[in-house]
Image 1 (tube, rainbow, N blue to C red):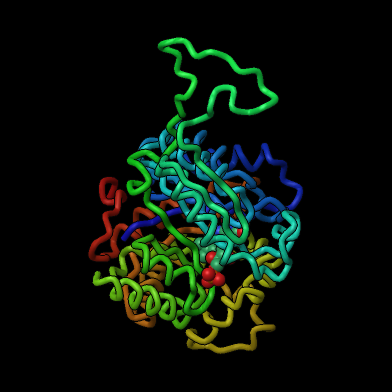
Image 2: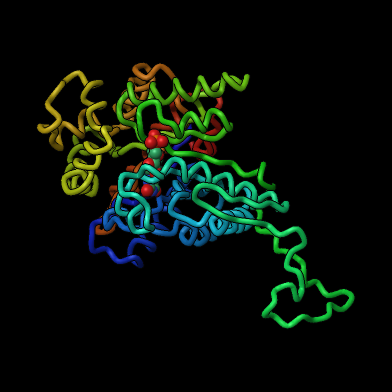
Length: 389
Ligand SMILES: Cc1cc2nc3c(=O)[nH]c(=O)nc-3n(C[C@H](O)[C@H](O)[C@H](O)COP(=O)(O)O)c2cc1C
């Protein structure tokens, strides 16, 4: 099995951008040294608790101080961007990082982000804008002349670059032999439009984003919210893969989760509850996970059922988080494989604000990679952790 990092990150409101950036660099270096395969950075312009607005800045900096780990924005919220600008930015980053970069895209789930860009707060434009935006991005990456006039976006790639003197109010000028006035920069992705790995995030049951992943051969990325939810995403993904005559492969799924590992169950629970994880859940994640309906699924799967309003930190540590000794966490993962009905290839650890006391958190990341994931077999996944184990 592979492990990855899903680095929103969940930072306490009041952390400065510089603090978050430097903390992120430290985590990236640590994760790289432990054999994490992917470091995936969220994109949020409004949330104090999830405070990285431009993943590429961090990605490029972190790539310079790490050796093997791959990076991806997870996700670029395509509907919030001009798609042509985003295509150029993604292509440029891809060329800088080469095979250590892949692209994550998403429809967006925050109403205030949509409203800030003049879009409906009910997110009714999110999925259609995602589809149309991706269409424009693909055209930009192919570097062929096109004209696009869609529902939301207009874009064009001129036949012959910019015609000298063609705009009335510009002075015409003569091109001399050998001048390269028409030359266009190549900011298409490394390996071309078809060489870029694209991943897409899905949150809902039977997610339309996972259908798209299956139809287009993209990598599906989920938040774990219990076996029924993940199973529904696997089912629609598989059906779409089969519809184009291919065989679905569970090892392609990346699943984000809260993880805390220590030498013993008692130590892990104590540190998780009283550290960054417990704080983020108490102050922020409980309502978020209720809103996006991914907390009830854990309760449905657990041996001990409670009312969703009675979930406390003890319950989270026992039944929701991958919390415990390496052996306990391995058993919890195997149980989710059984309940969901397939073995997914990567667990991406959600990162939390352990800025004030990073050592236990970093040790948990180390144990998860080297003593949990390194010992779990998933056919088809190629874990770099094995090189360390
Ligand atoms: C692993 C993962 C990461 C995500 N990262 C972000 C993010 O960085 N910014 C954001 O606004 N939404 C993020 N989302 C939410 C997506 O933008 C989007 O709302 C969701 O994937 C759409 O799912 P659906 O097609 O099932 O409705 C993320 C979702 C998942 C599962």
